[in-house]
Length: 237
Image (tube, rainbow, N blue to C red; front, side, top):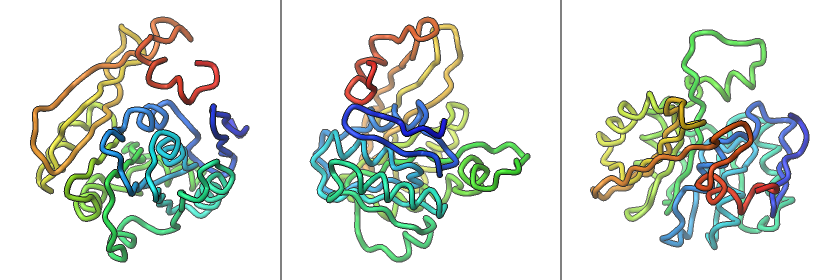
């Protein structure tokens, strides 16, 4: 798992990051809308920086800034940015989310986040993995507060969370004036339950567009929808 992850247009080193590259992040990076040609992008809790790199590949955003609290992950993210074809547009900050909100006057046209969301009560012996995995590192309330303060008037906020948290998250967002615009419900296979929700919010209320994505029909038999969404990134798609 510590080997560099090779995408079509960039490589991501992940040996120093607690949270390795997974399907959630790649799906969000491919699904988040760049149709409005965002000028500035913020990736909250960047980890390896994979989301920022995907948005750099997909858009012509001038500034893509990433925020990471863990020191090792921050250094790795910065290194992955330096080695990317879009190094001049990518920048990583080492700070907590609330510090960042208090210090920044900037607004962002697109905010993306693949937050840590394991609310189980136990911790492991690996501190950095715990920090990445347990949502006491970034409660949903903090995330929504930050987005409400940093998102531009016409901006979009895209996030991936467990499906079981969708109602709670959407209600919290609404209290901050953020409306759900799009939702993608992800299932591992046709028989499995919905596991993840990819959600897009803005300050504008509109009819919610909901769709479903099934990843595979059998082991390594990927669906056409999944291939179409990820084929610009995965080498073997």
